[in-house]
Image (cartoon, rainbow, N blue to C red; front, side, top):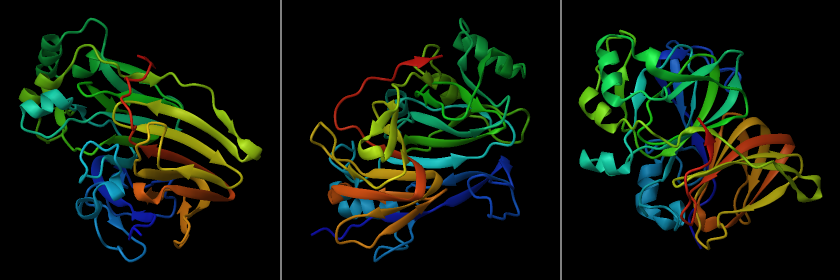
Amino acid sequence: MTQLYPFLMSPMFDPRPWGTLDLAPIYPNAKFNEKIGEAWLTGDNCVVTNGSLARRTLADLSKEFGPELVGTAARDPQRFPLLMKFLFPAEKLSVQVHPDDATAQQFGEPWGKTECWYVAHARSGAQIALGLKSGVKRAEFAQAIQENRAEELLNWVNVYQGEMIYVAGGTVHTLGPGSVIVETQQQSDTTYRLYDYGRPRPLHLERGLASVKEQVASGKVIRPAPVEIADGAGRMSEMIRAPYFSVDLCELKKPHEFSTRDGSGKDSVQILVAVNGCGIVEVAGQAPVTLAKGDAVVIPAALGQFTLRPQWAVEFLRAGVPGSDVLEPRTRF
């Protein structure tokens, strides 16, 4: 019998110069004295808030429980595989790049950082920059950084609520103001800042430019149509399947049972992040856990089956690690 149970995670609010004091609509009652840019949900240092393992970090628990927690699909059996967080940009983020695995390992890092962004909310005109404009070469972009005109060479696109964006390692990118993003990524904070609009923060041009790829698979994910769940329980949308993560958007009106195991036979920790409404996570023999908007609940892989019982209705993202090899998703750049 495992000691593990569903973990309710406590958000870690991270101040950033591009953040905001108002985290609505996700945390409308939160009050801050400094601008918050990110709410980390499953970082290495994020802390469990419920049960006998309360106050323990995910990094610590992953080392102790290994595949019981992270699952057999995880690349490192003693490292929590995915970082999920909310982003609240009120100004433009710095222009940055994350290396892919091969480039990161050349720099002595264990792995790179590929990520995806679910657009939870977006005001009219909200934009992101994803990659370089067609035909722009790395040397040309490096020159534009020196001449303080790097923004001109970025591929700016409008974003809308409900879209999923794939950001492969090696993609130059940034976020503009006006959206709320749920980011799912490899558990890595390897970020190289290339351009920062004159803000007094250091740049990382040598490693950053070495990480930039001129051609990438990044873009808006082309998704299949949502699938209706049996008995009118709701519907499920496959938002992304990628080499490092899979993310579904689930909308429930009735209880539904899920599994930590996929068709490959391998299992993975499951991360549930509520973007609207409220529900109760139930596992046989364990205390129920409430999942409300802005919360994350971690389902250890060893638990197998779990049920989500909506309180009227709940909309949430469900993320995990694929058990078999997956190609990069089809996208529109």
